[in-house]
Image (cartoon, rainbow, N blue to C red):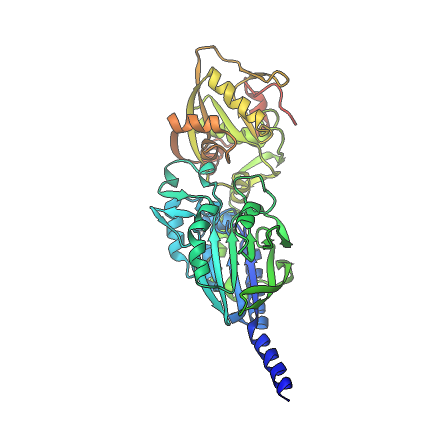
Length: 482
């Protein structure tokens, strides 16, 4: 009888030690409101089914920029939705800072949930690195980190008063404090992806290997759909895709005595299976109506029914249109700008304008001599990026075998080159020579490139983008690799 009682006691103790935890993750929503309304319904249903006190709701960043919905409200509409959904934490990504650091600070003030970004400092003060959250007796240490590559994307006065450090350095500082609190599970929500292992912007492999005490990593940034993957260190990784098309749902079993993860199930579920949250949609009805009205506002009607993306610097009419508007606004001699990745409608509305220029880039001009321009274009080729960035307005003689890049300029001639703040920041770390020149002497304008194109089209009502390119006396380089 005593043995039986002892056995029953052991079972009861084991049962009390093992607790269930559920994690619901979103990432890279980019202000996509329609799908996010469906996610809201899913959250309500899962909370009702599994218990709100047992469900951890986290977003891993790039949440407030990337669609016209987000742009027209400077991210507010997405944060309003997150507040209504009662997120447990938000981990901002690189694009959440794209409206500028001052607007980012204003957006943080709107949040009714913790914001975790331990490797990001604003006005000499680092954001919180982690929060201890109790979910029905499970003690969770939730850590939040951004990508460490912000300075390679953002340049100029709109991005002052911030500092970003490596995630590894931030974790070294806070991990001892976290471990002292003896959490049952450690979760890292990070705006870095799994696939780009050799990229400085995504170091999940190195982070998980260096900090094996992390149980779960909820990734972002790379827009991958990863239902779940065991990493080399023993950590479990998942990532919820993009634009709220999917979300991650995890079922975890935690041993709260031994402080370890016993079991993990993770699925990637489509939001399309859920109806839109009618209550939340009604609450934000005025904002949604404003967005719908602006989206369909006509800016220009081209003769061509479609504007086709093609090779930059050679035959890309959309790129030539944007470059012509930049040249017109800045009086530059040449423009360095990226190709369009998508086909646009010739019925050019505000919605098409945003598709053409989906980022908050401003204009920069740089005076360069012949040898400097040659080095800039050479850097484009050697970094395998000329398929994305083309030079408009200057002819080049190029010998790819000999790696010779000769602009058709006089030896002592200088020109004014216009480009985006993204390129001035090095274009994601690719163009160090160009970035160095910009840091030394570039001139920054208060011209958002999207606004420049809109103004150009409204001022020049008879524009034909395809003809613009081929009518130029200096249509571009002689040859570009496909």
